[in-house]
Amino acid sequence: MTAGETLRGLLELTRPVNVIAASVLTFIGAFVAGGVTTHSLEVATAVAATGLAVGAGNAINDYFDREIDRINQPDRAIPRGAVSPRGALVFSIVLFLGSVGLALTLPLLAIVLAGVNLVALVAYTEVFKGLPGLGNALVAYLVGSTFLFGAAAVGEIGPAAVLFLLAAVATLTREIVKDVEDLEGDREEGLNTLPIAIGERRALLVATVLLVVAVLASPLPYLLEYFGTAYLLLVLPANAIMLYAAYESFEDPTAGQSHLKYGMFLAAVAFIAGRAALEATAVA
Image (cartoon, rainbow, N blue to C red; front, side):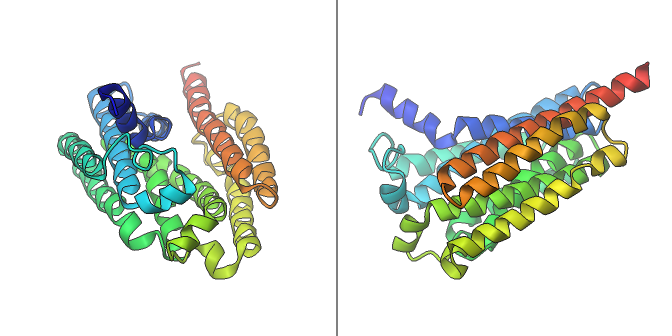
């Protein structure tokens, strides 16, 4: 492999789209807490720390999952030979150290959250991934906690708590669908994921019920006056996309989990628009 191919492989290990998405969620957490303008340095630090931590977590996940990926994802960086397993491990450690260094400059609550999340990221693949539902729940917590981390960086986590719960439940749905998609490779590796433990259809039914709960709870930020009307105008189509994706997953888990991601992205946009609308109303 050339140096360029190796660099491309290292970038792929981080899952740039996931890094950007998690960083945006951290920013949203700070924005909802009302601290973007008053604590701009802390917000930038939290966003950067999140990006490095997510990149590191994805890289270490690929390191541990390299044998599974030879079956499920043979085009990923390690299976195709762009990055060696040792190179991926070293790269993840460097990213983790960078994230820790940034997080240590933030308020105490943010430091505690960062510490818990870093341990969870490392433990996920080796300890939790093969346990029915628990690995999914841990990933759901990690995604939702990005809102809390951004809010903690500016010293106010109250408004972000509801967003944490909604994002965590939606993510849990998607993770279960992804396990159905990866069933063959997971079974080959002896993992006991939820679809393997209770069956594909039952797992998808659990995922759908969870999503319905999140959809029913989605008006809460508006009712609690955390967001303005713009939030509802965007979160309703986001809900529709995610509900359709859950239905679609029974026939095509790959398409379903992909469309769930689109719906979750639109929901994140709804959070930003809703807060911006509320602030605009307050100024007016």
